[in-house]
Image 1 (cartoon, rainbow, N blue to C red):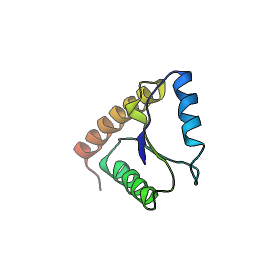
Image 2: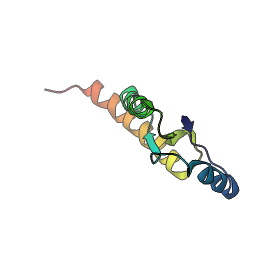
Image 3: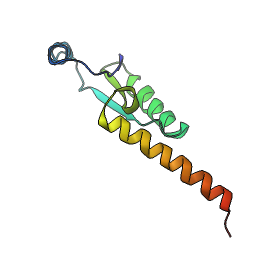
Image 4: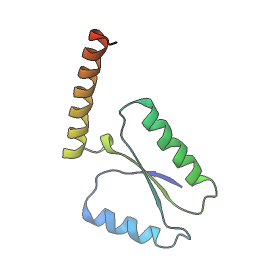
Length: 94
């Protein structure tokens, strides 16, 4: 089935690993960065494909869903990209 990742303590991680050890197929981790709808849409398509025969656990890992340095870096990069994109569209081009 589909599971969404989240930050947890070490004991929860060990319990989770023990529960997943009996599945037939290795789990599939689908990671996404919400920097535009296209990225998220592709991640959902990969998730749907993985759920097809229901023989493995699927983990949907949304990097911005977990408070971390990585998530902060992605948010800062997205803000910079948006700002530069607006400047470029105002300046125009050949």
